[in-house]
Length: 640
Image 1 (cartoon, rainbow, N blue to C red):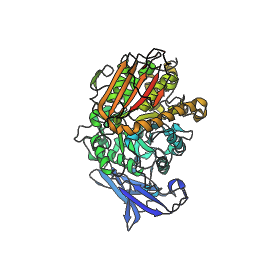
Image 2: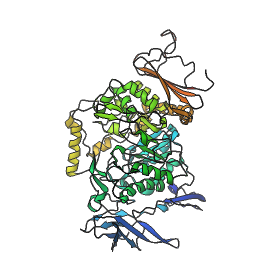
Image 3: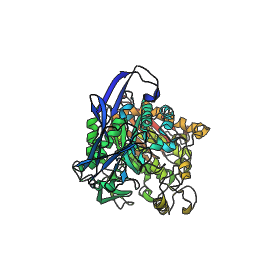
Image 4: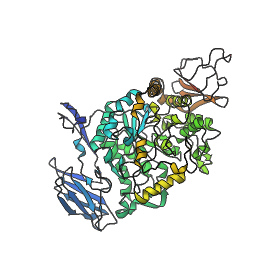
């Protein structure tokens, strides 16, 4: 890690933090050094050249071309050793464009490009990461404080930029959010997309802004006490603009296939493993992200010892000792062995808990198509198991998969499971991208939100749900020709059975490639100022305030596996989480349209109450809960 902290005046040119004009302020610079991409050659403290390197084992000869800001183009031959092609260019400067010309004259961008302003097929731009001045005193936040807000930069604000998103951070901090999670920002084909088909993993998406503008977003979040996480994709490259097939086919493993294309070969060539490990370190160091969420880890195939996921976690823990850095998985396999206490080398802090979502969704909607079939008829017990033990499927048989799924998670801390009622996948992979607020009545939804936000596991909120947003979030992309047609037809085949709120036939499904589909997915910020939107925000704000006061301090104290539960009829339950100091958290809920049967009297007042009270004497005794009612309690050690 190369870090410089110094005292200096910060001018108002925009190169300092947000062009603040503050003088005499300490700052830090961060530049991640790696074997990929251009590297400055320093002599006597001064940059005298750039050294360019490309791992292209399939090419005999490679040249580097450089285009300066005046349009003058120079070409420089590389030397080859061990599959690496390298050369040094004395006249190269930050802001110049460059690329590699292969044997057959094909010109390709740098796969480790820090910025590709003209898109995935254009030249890369030389970036000086030390130009940006960081506040030196950010030290992160512990994982137990995480309240995560997932957003897509392109649809979060009308501008669809990092700068636009930064203007909304203050409101999220006031709401009680503690962490922002960005959907992938690595450069991908076209002007719009979810980001999961990136092909230049080190280059922030140009349509969202420059590298410095992304850094300003992160710094603005830190100044408000917000962590920032980044979603990264290490299981495949996108279908357009991936030139690695041409000059480095060793990147791909013919034995495995993902649903999105060829799998990455992490077993054969060391540079492939290093490419992705360096990418993780790069985002965490150079952009000061506080954590990464690894997409679809179940599609990362590696029989090495250690495997790539273990090695990546170990390397991250080794490098970042001055602040907590959080690693989260998406893993349909429910591999509990990959999870551990926060910060453990080789392990991951948490996993997105699909089981929690699926069980909650069935409880709310009654849907049973696709993977929801595994939860139909037993959703409440699976939901409660998630609250007590993490996973619902811990080696249990899945009818949807036709196989057993998961591992025992009982001994893991509940902080290892990120619980959500909505996210980009669960909204956007519906036929019409509907949100829950348009599918179920508000009182039912509010009860489930209260459980999510008041349970010990870290909650995730998808952008807009805190204001009851009704704008859809649909799958969109910007491919052309045959690829666009294939994706459009694939969506129509996938939703032949259609699970949605209306009665439109399959032929009227939104076209993923249409700009209208993208524009319809943008948040309507006017809704935040309407009475209903303000009411939803007050609801979230109050619950998150209660979480911070009563739940968060006790999360590190909750004893794994020490959770008990009582059911009262088919729809009501009480859960108790035991803490090491003898205290406990408790939550009781009735998820039905009628009052619940009797639960044991808690003999203490709840710190949170959602839903109607039962009028005194209504049922003749205490312990009953009204319809869609939630109560949360703290029992101190001294309580009876």
